[in-house]
Image 1 (cartoon, helix red, strand yellow):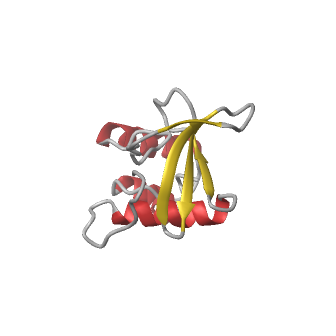
Image 2 (cartoon, rainbow, N blue to C red):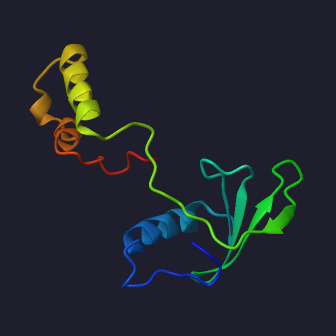
Length: 123
């Protein structure tokens, strides 16, 4: 994302942008969204104008003052757990060890088996 960007129907990241935008609209404060992406030395403040990014700046979390502009930020989808085949197999094995009942009746179990992150799992 960078200043002047907004979702585009041709962008391959459109669905990620729109999901981020919906979350930002419900959790942001006014036209500002504060982020602290993994790997960033300082948190970022995204200033929005309508559905477009007006500016991206670093800020001091203690004083809440903006520090300097950032020309572009790459945000990758993140998870708190791996989704490779080995991790999904381990998850399913542990599920069967620890929980009683038929695991195939659980949406989470079935989605993980199919390599899908269950809706809302990122939150």
